[in-house]
Length: 169
Image (tube, rainbow, N blue to C red):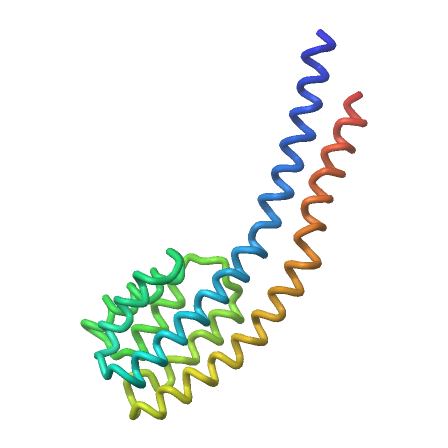
């Protein structure tokens, strides 16, 4: 009987630690997605500048070369461009995306839509560069949050598990 009790207590400790690790992953995923979107913007800028391909084709290529969540944004935007302008399609795709980005991250990413497909090449490139600068700030903030909160959630899960184990003993 005691063996079952100790096994259950051990299981509680392990599960609470795992929950803490799971909660800490959102900070890692946010940082990765911000870096992916920045890389995607670099590809977009290069493609607009040198290839003169239509934006839907560029978005299709980017969606295949970045992570799943960020790729979905570009894919949705490309699909919506069949019936909407590039800027409206981009805003809708970012808004409907299911990723780990915060609302303020999404708002910054949506600023790209201001001149997307509406101005000349230089105007679009300058808008991408402005958006990249804002993204840099968000990446630094995400790194700081990750550094502070990742260990906090893991330790909090473990401490909470130990507390439950002590109470149940």
